[in-house]
Length: 288
Ligand SMILES: C[S@@+](CC[C@H](N)C(=O)[O-])C[C@H]1O[C@@H](n2cnc3c(N)ncnc32)[C@H](O)[C@@H]1O
Image 1 (cartoon, rainbow, N blue to C red):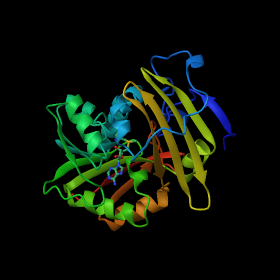
Image 2 (cartoon, rainbow, N blue to C red):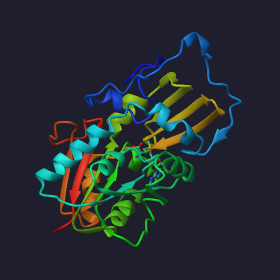
Image 3 (cartoon, rainbow, N blue to C red):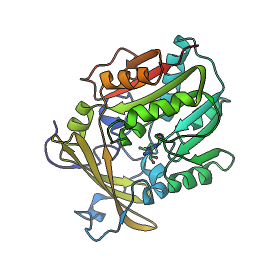
């Protein structure tokens, strides 16, 4: 559990990657400004925007050090060990599309899907030749099949309602061919509690000042972040909520959707994970 109080530039303000031993220091924005120049507290008058709306314009700046290449290498290595081969990749909860980019660079055909129109617009701006569609994991109906679905960097922790993870797993299974694979990461309760409780992450990422206040509510087992950002296009705050997922419930949801191989593992060593791990990765496959 973390103590209350300000942790200046302690890590990336979302998704917690820097604190869970990913093998990369993703906590430090590449370029910084003097902290004396920043406000002590986020102005309460900042307009509140829906989750992943205004953030889309500054997301890549804030997340510039996220190890997408390493995550792609990890997933591909774990898939290869399980005999997977394939060509078509669906990046679910793709955001600005950066998690799918290493796959595309390796020659995979990648389609990105995200419910946030703003994130999809940002993805198309960043990668005009890519294919990015608005869609929701719970209701996905693209009418096409893929060899691999990825959902990276907490995307599925955004499914906060009861049964929503199961729905998403069913929709993913419906978009995979025989032997198709589903690979994703999620925060567990240990992760959300220990990393989000009473925490403030503040700093500069390029031209963007951020101050993100994290809370964990043990009564309802939800983590929340009030994400204040001030960039060249002004200030805003977004309120995000994440639900933790434990290895056991991941396995139930995936097997319920028809996945017969379900391995819950840790990054980067690929050893079996348990509920004491703050963040887990899942590699699941449908029958071949
Ligand atoms: C932390 S971002 C990760 C984005 C991207 N995968 C990356 O690695 O940068 C979480 C993403 O999950 C998306 N998301 C939220 N609810 C979702 C849902 N119901 N179905 C699919 N994606 C969702 C958000 O819009 C957001 O883009």
